[in-house]
Amino acid sequence: MLKLLKDAFKVKEIRNKIYFTIFILFIFRLGTHITVPGVDASRLQSISDLPFLNMLDLVSGSAMQRFSIFSMGVSPYITASIIIQLMQMDIVPKFVEWSKQGEVGRRKLNQATRYMTLVLGFAQSMALTAGFNMFTQYGFVPNPNAQTFILIGIILTTGTMFVTWLGEQITEKGIGNGVSMIIFAGIISRLPVDIKGLIEDYFINIEASKIWQSVIFMIVLIIAVLAIVTFVTYFQQAERKIPIQYTKRVAGAPTSSYLPLKVNAAGVIPVIFASSFITTPSAILQAFGNYEGEVWFETVQTLFNYNTVPGAILYTVLIVAFTFFYAFVQVNPEKLAENLQKQGSYIPSVRPGKGTEDYVSGVLMRLSTVGALFLGLVALLPILAQMLWNLPESIGLGGTSLLIAVGVALETAKQLEGLMLKRQYKGFMN
Image 1 (tube, helix red, strand yellow):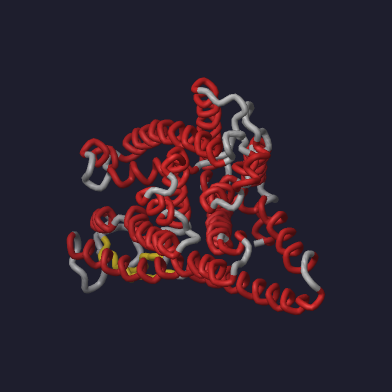
Image 2 (tube, one colour):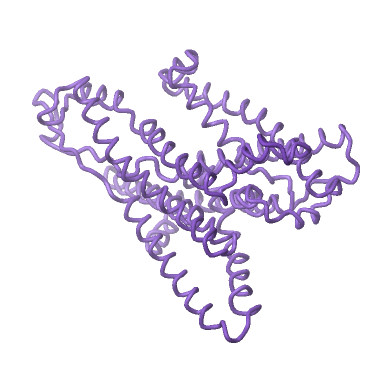
């Protein structure tokens, strides 16, 4: 990785892309420290143990803790993306039609996603503000009235749209997927605070007789982190190579090749989707704080709280479900079979067309089963450990953080390798 970065900085075009990405991430981090006017953010310390607040704080890079203008981060955008992609599965005919129109259709779907983000962002911002004001005993907003709540909602929604735009700029002109890089920057920015908290909890604010227990815990924690990083790296790199033969009528084509299908074709997107899906209902639920104590309220709150057994199970099931869903979105066996047929290639012993589509679907289903179970276990085990042994909140979200951080780092490294390889080919042709 270090050698790759060193080589990348030697190329002016790639170096400019890296600098541009760093500049955009700097703007994002700067915005996370600008508190929304008209609120008393210090009041949030009294409800800092709310699970959904910690999850939102994770993906926003501690912006929620300060209730900054970027508090919601890209969470509404991710939720909107999920809804738009679900609507493309023969639910809304117009979206299905757009999904088959190539670049033009993609632009229309992106525009629809932005409008959906705008609506969800405003609804979520109003719910968060009203909920926080109730949970902090009506001291979060010093001047609570409709005008103040609407103004705060507009500011937070504007912040979300601006962060989404920053992510798009990274995707177009920088390195890596913009949304993933924004979340990655937020997670990395929390590391010093989390490490400091662990040291204070297990080495400074403890009795001398328990020091050895703390040492053993830290050793086990370091080993667990290294193990997760190793396994995530292995699964992200692992792939199934399906042999491909080319017909003789294709001039200049090789006689054989292979089609690489990754074990985890969906990457870390399912973890990001599941995190957003579990936090959005919890955030909206805060607006109904006066119903606390009623059966429906307690049931929904328990279900969307990953610190409870039902919530942890739902979180894992969402990761598994989104892994299957996004893997088929990424690969799309129907289009793959159609492209192979157009290129005059085929999979040995498999009939072209529908036969190839069914074969690829079966292989992708088996691969995604392994990838989904792995992602679910890595995200679930730290949460279970936190619940069983009453560990710090950062441990419970550690699996999710590592999955996202390692996955984004690997995807970015692959993009850098692709740019370097492309440059080598250009140099050869010139």
